[in-house]
Every structure is written in structure tokens, then in C-alpha cells.
Length: 250
Image (cartoon, rainbow, N blue to C red; front, side):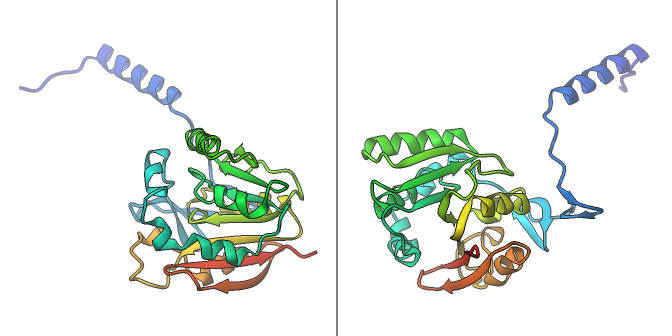
């Protein structure tokens, strides 16, 4: 039997929908440059992406704090060889380093030891829950030169010309606003400072990582081409990742 909805019922339904819409947070619109859109929205896209494309690449979904245990998995050292990453960074005692997308502090604590007590690590996250986990780990390890920083999806909240090196390990591909974030990061670099991408190799289909969570060297260099950065080198010493290094001119 069909149910009839009277006019009064429709009005109640409409009011409820309007109330629900008012309670939902508005989504940020993709940034634009002049009349040309920087970002392109496509209704048909990879389920692991957000449906927004930047320079031909779909932006991947962010891993939430619920996945923190994966960042500390026991096999990570063998899979990713962080000691080789630290060696490639050529850090000096006293350096200021920004660990963007620091997560649980897996790299932050290693960086902290590399720069010594006179150095500083800015552990940048957009999730307070991740920073809470990181802070507790640093306290347990008696590490005091890691400073947690709550950034936003467009700004890492770092002081201008303050850091010697910016490190992004498997995080750049998740930036909702890569153009704005890179611009802000470049401003935070000292003259001669370096920006380093560690990304799973998108060129290799055998790397057991979801497609949108890998990047090719060519794509990274393409996306950095619009910034005052010079490509320095790409190291392939890691088992399944690149280390792609850029430098801000002195």
C-alpha cells in the first residue's frame, strides 16, 4: 500500500534537511590562480583518492590517526631502511629540521638524535591525535628537542626562513592543497635549505603499495617546477622508495 505524504509532512522533511545542511561543515573549495583552476574535480576517480586532481595526479586520501600502529609496525625498519635515509640527508649537529606529516614520530626521534641536543625537530601534523601519540613517545624516550606543531592543510605553521631541511616521508601525495603547502614550506626554508621527498616508487608496479600512495620521480619534479627550488639528486638506495632532494637557492 502506498503511503501519502501530506504538505505538512513535506515541510517537516524540508526543514530537517535544511537543519542537517547547516550542521555539516562546508568543504573547502579548490584554490584558484587567476581564472585558471589549480585543482580539477572529477566525479569518476580512484576509491583511494579524494576526486581532486593536481597536475594530472589524483590526491590520495589521508591516513587517519587510527592507522598509527601501521607507522610503528616491527617490519618497517627492514622494509624502508630509515638508517639509509638519515645517511642520505647528511644532517649536521645543530640543524633545524621539519618532519612534515610526522605521525607517531617514527622519523622525528631518529632525526632528533642526528641533529643533537643543539638541533631542533619541528614535528608537523594536522591531526592533534597524532601529535598526542608523538609527544608521549618522545617523553618516554627522554627526547627533548622535538617540538610538536599543529599545522593546517594549507600551512605547516613554520617560521619564515627557519629550517635547514624539510623531510616528507610518504606524505606529500596526501596533501589536499599541495600548491599552497609547498609554497609555505619554501618560505620556511633558509637560503640553501633542502626539501626532501621520500615516496614509494610509482614507476614500479611490484611495490606493494596502493597506486595513489606512490609517486614517480618525474611527477614530483613536475610539481616542484613552479617553485624556487633546484633539483639536486634522486637517490635509489632504498628498497622500494625514492629519496628526491631539492634545494632553495642561496
